[in-house]
Image (cartoon, rainbow, N blue to C red; front, side):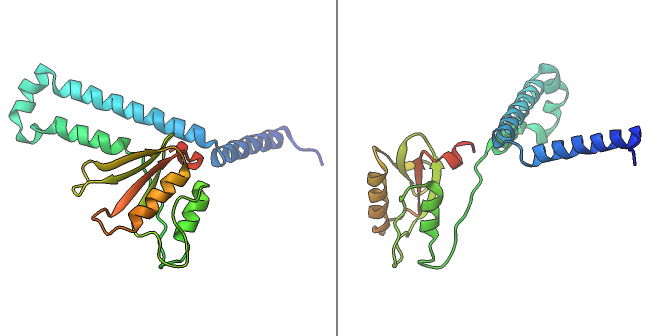
Length: 187
């Protein structure tokens, strides 16, 4: 049986839609991240436009000066922009003592950085972040600034510093580990 022209066109449309859908679903992570960066730039530009508008003398004299709710609008816009630009996304590994959390993180990052063993070995919350450099960092008590910021030449030194910190009973509740991690590089 021969297909009609309409059936063939319909089939072609379906094939195109499926191909587009497949490309979308398995689309390049780089493309997705590039789109996010573009969107962030567009949002930032919109915020800049709004800030220019709310500082315009006509807006100030006719609107802003007559409303107490708009007194700190620029500050609120700045905070919202910071929130929108925040791209950190946490992946949390939780479990019982010695259940393999550190081993999984080591496998994911491709280096044996976190101490592992039969006993409880990682006593601090560790945040692993991408960086071109190897850095061990801890925060001050107020979590406003880094207390320690120690660069290392190799992962062995970094892992030793982490073990040393785990053995102390100081007030540091977590540490940041910065290192080249291809999986995290794009985020």
